[in-house]
Image 1 (tube, rainbow, N blue to C red):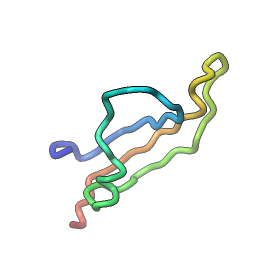
Image 2: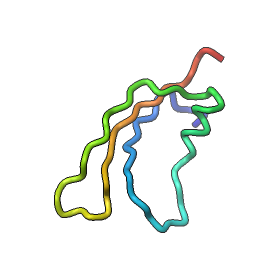
Image 3: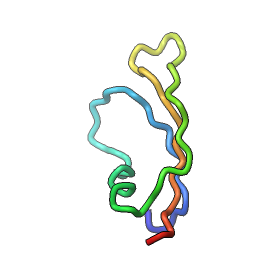
Image 4: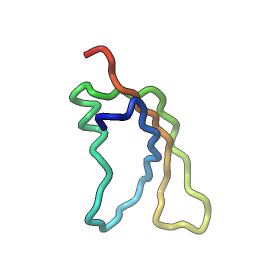
Length: 66
């Protein structure tokens, strides 16, 4: 994420068979490039969606303390 100062992410708790993935934001946090600015609480999915266990919203910001 060389051009972004913030990332607004919806984390979804579910297993998906896929061959394409989003960037590894957790690795960017661990190396100090990003920090968690806001972290929402896990919410239950609405009725009728058996695959999604829950979701939350997380905001990441570029860490300018480097």
